[in-house]
Image (cartoon, rainbow, N blue to C red):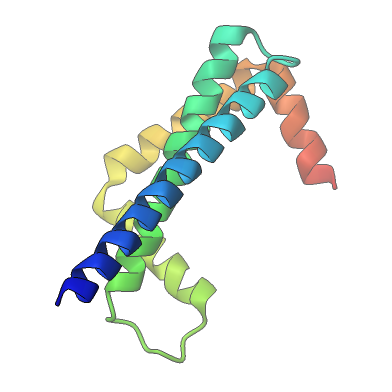
Length: 125
């Protein structure tokens, strides 16, 4: 029994160390993204864009986790089709939030010319 507790403690410690390293890596990536965006945007707007990217990434992770937990769809249906069904149903359930997000994204792209140019460059490739 003592070996089991010791193994559990070692595993928990290892997971804690990995979690701290992942948080540090994400923080470093956020700082790098902020510094990269500051070449095109003012520092406050770059910080907001970085925060929006972090929140969007977190939202995507939540959607994927919720999607993975639910097992309503057929197992042989392609992942892209299942994800599109999930996102469509989510948007139809929360129409106000979906419209607000679309308007905010459109405003951000329309109001910030460097962001619009960066998006054009990405889509042109």
